[in-house]
View 1 (cartoon, helix red, strand yellow):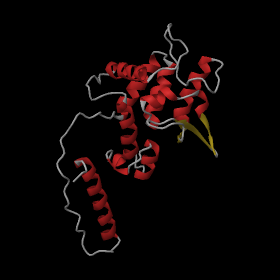
View 2 (cartoon, helix red, strand yellow):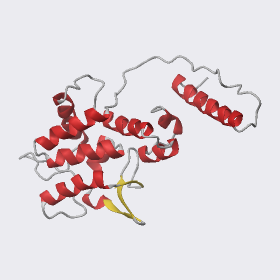
View 3 (cartoon, one colour):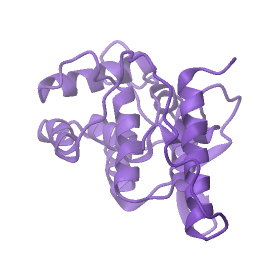
View 4 (cartoon, helix red, strand yellow):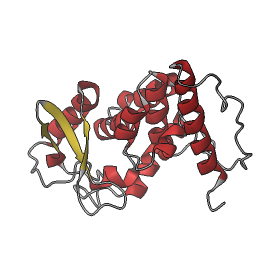
Length: 219
């Protein structure tokens, strides 16, 4: 097979779900896929997700130090699953409306422009609004998150800086292992959505996965 074991297992999961539905709806007399087993995969380095308690501790770390930018940024990453490059690319004007809903437009990895968006609900929006207010006058084309260092003040922060800020916070709350990275915040978002009972298609939409198999990895 030209497929990786992880891909094969994703398809196996889909087959089991499909045959379970057929059996439950009385289309077939027996669920022939019930005992299908996944193929063995080699466990590699995984980026771990945070628990809800760890998320709260991480956010409290930044909030307790009065770091309005970092609190708003990490909160946003946890709530809508942003990648570091997506955080770096954001502009103030990316907050907008889609019909009656407040959204934030996202310039995704490998994309040439902002062609995707996520709902921006109050828990994600309010810290962002407060951070923008602290900055004073801003233009829609200004970067959403800017450097506060004296030698680069006001410049767009890059993805490496985003990773460093998250790494600092993770270390501060005791999550010092190599399996905890800035990407862990994205994994956390997907995992908590699944835990909350959100449907796979909706999780796929929030996480902006091209392939459902990727989303199924959170199950």
